[in-house]
Image (tube, rainbow, N blue to C red; front, side):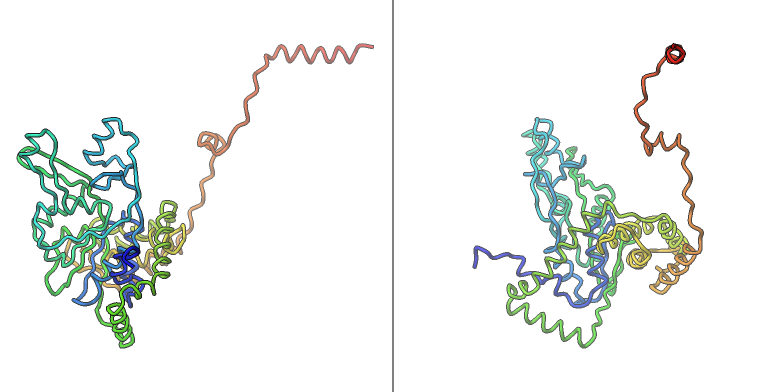
Length: 400
C-alpha cells in the first residue's frame, strides 16, 4: 500500500465540490491562460474558498523547466535566473530540461520578508565571490500558483513586495550593495472575508478577476456536502478514487484548452464590443478590457472552440468588472445587473452595425504579400532573334 500511496489522495477532489460553479470556472480559466493575471475570491468563512483552491492543485498541468534549476526557469524564455545564465556562458547550451507539475504555493500571513523574497548571505558572498542565496516563497511560486488566504490581512510590507514582483515578473533582492534577481511569474489567487476588512486598491487592481461566493446553499446542496464530507473523512483514498475518472476528464480539458489557446481568435466586432462595454460602464483604466479579452479566450478554449463568442464575453465581464472602480473612483463597481444590461446593449448595437466589407486587394499587393505566387520567369530572348526566326519560318513556307 505504501509503495503506491499518493499524497494527492488526502486532498479533497475538485470534481467533488458541490456548487461553486462560477468559482470553479474562474479557477480553470486562470490556469488555462496565465496572462489573465490573477483571481480574488470573496466570501464568508466556511464557504469553500480555500478548499477549492487547494483542490485545484491535483488538476494542474505539467510544464517544461531547466533541469536542476532552483527557480523552475522556462528554457524558452529570456527571463532566466543568474545560475542558468552562468550555465549557458560556461557552454551548457542548450540547457537540459525536464517536465514537472505546477503547484499551489501558499504565502502565510505570518511569513517574514526574508522567507518571502529570499535571504542573501552577504558576508559569505563577499568572502567566496559566489552568490549565497536561499530562495524564498517567490522563487517557489515562479510559474506556479501563489495563494494568499485572507489576502486583505496581508502586512503592508509584503503587499509592497508582491506588487513589485507582480508588475515586473522579477524578484530583486538587495542587501548591503549585493544584488541578486530571479524570475517570479506566478498566478496570484487571493481569498478574503469582506467582513474582516477591504483589500488595498493597488493590490485589488492586480487581481484581474473576482468571484463572490455567497455561502448560502440549498437544503439539498447542504445535505450532499454533509454526505461527501463524511465519506471523505472516513476514507480519503477511496473517496479520491471514486472521483478519479472525473478528475482525469477535467485535467484533460485543461490540457486541451492550453494547447488550442494560441489559436483562439477574437472577432473584430467583439474586440470593439469589449471596449465599448468598459467605456459605457466608465471603468477606470484599461486593465479590465484586457482581462475580459484574455478571459474570454480562455473560456472559448475550455469549451473547445477556436473563436470567442458573446457568451464568453458575458461571463468574462462578470468576472473582470465586479471589483473594478469606475468614474475615477467615484462610482461603485458595476452590479451583475448593470453588467448584463450593458452587454445586452453593446451586443445589440454590434449586431445592427453593418459588417465591414473585405477590402479588395490589387494583384500587385497580393503578389507583394505573397498571396499569389508568380511562375518562374523565362529567360528573355532578344527581339531580333525572334524576328529572324519568324522570317526563317516564312521563307521556308515560300520555298517550292
